[in-house]
Length: 198
Ligand code: ATP
Ligand code: AMP
Ligand code: MG
Image 1 (spheres, rainbow, N blue to C red):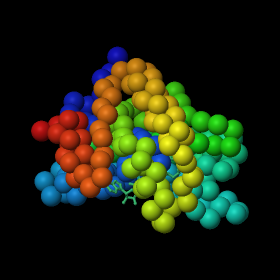
Image 2: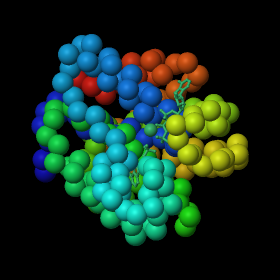
Image 3: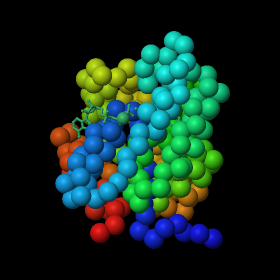
Image 4: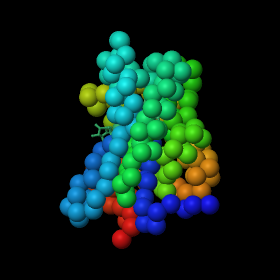
């Protein structure tokens, strides 16, 4: 059985909406650039949007999770195929373990998606329900779902469960990184130190 290219990394960064994945990933990118480490960053939702933006009535990335699950699944498979083609030594993927759809929580990384992404490392970003609530409310650039503390606790618990289930399927390590208020830089540094070679 192949174990992939020695030293290559496919780091999949996950977490519930508004926890700060993209903020932390941006900090990781800044740090890698400053060290001249070659890498590729891909936001799974942005790849889905390449196709979804052709759909009538779809105005923003936050409308995708309101499509039928069938339609989302087609976009999900498209993105998995695109990302599976990347051959960079370090690939960082910003995505979700599950999507809150009208029909309930739906997996962002079912088996075929995990097989396409081939993560070498899974990283779950977490924060307190209070911090996430505040981030969702204050970020006017997005149309995130309104939530209560109870809903966020359930989402954090679902993320934790799916993280370890995915880790078992891939046989790769799962790292939980907390992203407290004002500390995205520290979270990024921890990720680099833990999962990137050198
Ligand atoms: P989504 O899944 O919806 O894409 P996300 O997990 O990528 O969400 P971000 O967009 O990175 O979340 O962050 C949500 C909001 O929280 C943004 O306004 C961002 O500036 C803020 N934020 C992220 N991390 C921190 C932090 N450590 N301290 C303070 N604010 C933060
Ligand atoms: P994001 O900016 O990370 O919130 O991504 C935008 C949207 O893309 C999400 O709200 C989801 O609708 C969709 N998305 C991202 N990753 C996945 C995934 N792995 N599976 C299905 N949909 C996803
Ligand atoms: Mg994001």
